[in-house]
Length: 111
Image 1 (cartoon, rainbow, N blue to C red):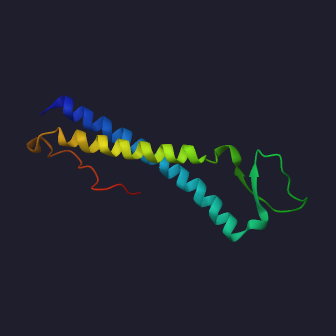
Image 2: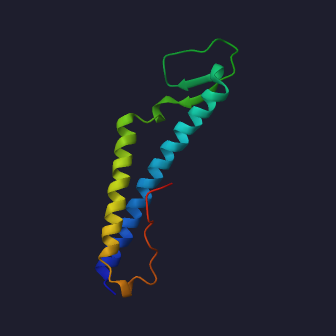
Image 3: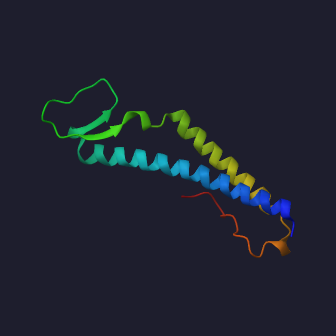
């Protein structure tokens, strides 16, 4: 087996998984905020900001410091695309007859 090519492929999988996990973490944050805003906008509150809610208002706190910026989101998406292309390229470097025990890369990007 082409050991260097396989190691490169496995490293590419790790990078791809990490990039996908970062996207998923942003999805969870944005989805949580969106759901709360849609269902209970009157109690929505970002913590770590210099704003206050009226006394006695029940609040759903979201950490403002964890809210991703547009640059962070777009950079993560770009990195995800790059790691996907690297994964595909490293797969192509492994001879067909040596791919048997390896997990194939996904056919497309998707969560």
